[in-house]
Amino acid sequence: MAILAALAVSLAACSFATPAQQPTATLVPAPLPSETPTPTPILLSSTTTATSTSTEAPPTPISTPTDQPVGESVRFAVIGDYGNGSQNEGDVAALIKSWGPDLIITTGDNNYPDGTADTIDEHIGQFFSEFISPYYGSYGEGGQENRFFPSPGNHDWHAKDLQPYLDYFTLPGNERYYDFTWGPVHFFAVDSDSDEPDGASRKSIQADWLKAGLAGSDSPWNVVYQHHAPYSSGRHGSNERAQWPFAEWGAHVVFSGHDHTYERISKDGIYYFVNGLGGAGRYDFRDVIEDSQVRYNEDHGAMLVEVNEEIMHIQFINREGIVIDVIELTKSEF
Image (cartoon, rainbow, N blue to C red; front, top):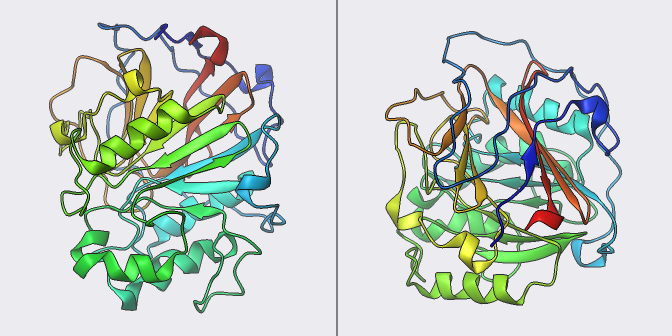
């Protein structure tokens, strides 16, 4: 696979429409992916507490994912390790809603601490009910169609057989791992937990499903997301079980969580992102891996991704509205 061409860009130069209340960009150097990239400066941790971000009225639901023309662009948010019902989660949810995303994907740990039925609506529906359909919780009427696509985390699996999670959401396939398309993007949600019945190793039934799905995808972009981070400099570190040959199989980017940090990693010609600052307690960084390029853990936040057939524009924005990392991937360089 050809090496990605990636460059840091200012929001003023971005070819996409800027979201409401778009913060001023903080530029971060974005070196080209390589086998041994030169790391960018590290953003050190602190104990700073940010103020909440105001929200706007939720966007009007649009048509179902399978109805989205491939030629159209899509804006989606990525949130991870968030589901604890805290003010931190509420602030991040308000930030996400201010962007008016078409959909939200999650990198797991949707319902702390034990994935139980008595906490799931408070920890998810309270903040995201308008994106969920069908929605049977206590926080409004829900959406006209589903625009919330989680992946399960280890805390969701604390509940027997993941049952509260499976009961709460209506998702494609077996609902633990699944795929769907939206505009120019083919999304693949992976269950990276060791309790997954179809396995979570690269030689599992689930891995065979992903390999075949990526090979058969005719979408301009293939996005994989899961909970456990294949590569991470955080407290949990890199997860060898999760180190599947994503780039070889056809993925263009991989999002994960588990470590409550933000990190951008260049590996095998694609980018891996750790995105676990959605609301749970923040983690420190431990052993910095060789391919790490940007690291941040000063505050909570989420990712905003805007995609058309040729460009994927990726940002991590903290709950104060400060852009911590911004990078643009060009499809023609794959």
